[in-house]
Length: 550
Image (cartoon, rainbow, N blue to C red):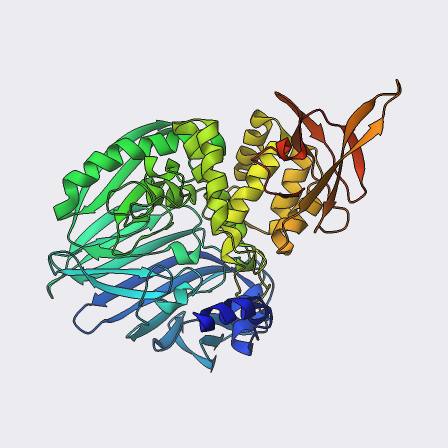
């Protein structure tokens, strides 16, 4: 107990004093060896050997030359996997290795706006995920009948943990093909649409899946198991959307009962708030996974046991979160925020997780009411630690605090309340997805867009919640003074403390019975008439994530 308490006290200083290495810079920055080329297409072939927990294959990378290069090409592949060869135009190329980065020496300079391919052959026993999806690696699991069940989890750690690629979020291939070879009768499921199944002569089968939209590297994921498939159609904003579901054979009826009912409800809500599903061409798919879940584009990982809540419990501790399936809702919300809109640097990953956390609040409003939505949002605030900033360190592959989920969602609920116009707020969310459709972005781009479209300058609000660990405190006190007629009147005095200089957030507060009033606090003390019985009756609208000191 004492050790844990001391560790918690030291945690903020330990986090902020984290030392970053040369390897972190190679992994997290846009190096010269990455900057000159743009990934256009991945053609990834991988064979899984469950007995030896190994894999082998190749990735043919099609790319455009953005500017004539004299430098090498950086390709990432994590040990203990080994790069066997790099082949271009029939010629094997040499490389210099620096940890997990391979700097491949091209045979000749390549001209700006030209297009080329390079094939990267590799093999080995990849890092095994011990606690997926929270740590990365290949998952060699068993299903409930003791049969092989294989997948990968690699967000944060990076997809070079299982295949060679440009391992940085800023550059997404515009399309890709994934060829999964596995022992029969196992089924290989991937992103996008199934193009073909090939029976091989060695007791294996190869499943080829094709994605026609841009896709971030960590979302390219295989699922291998004893799957059964069923499908449905959804009449959405952009037309007819194909819904595909892949469940373990023994869970087929459970999956039908849940997915055929819950997926259309989720899509209707999110298309209303966020705009059309971003990947109609590739379809929407849920795949039962050997771990809790992940937002793999057009192949969302589902492992919540066909139950409501988060593994059957309510993260808000209010009871509201037990009315819907957390993993189905949250991971599907990432199709808009995380997959359609992807951050260039994982330091800005609150854009993925904050908005997707807020999708839970929006879904609660869609399926219940706004009172329940706010109850859920406020209840989740107990999970916020405020020990490290939400935005991490740039260019070193460093995520910010886990508060990016619940604090990010509370920040958005606060902004929605301040905008005070749900239709305008809805158009902001839809506009984000339209303006940054299939793009990689920075937090600043998202912040600027919200400022412009809302007509409110939230710059200091974003700084407060994203770049500090302090929650702004509204300090209030009550005094009496003589009014113009010689009587006495109550006055509320208020001001912001524990905030960044220039912090500016309008608030909806209760100053009189049965009525709410807008005030615009600053760090200078202000006064307003107050007709409640006592200071204890003063309230700030619960949607605002602020503290009140009376």
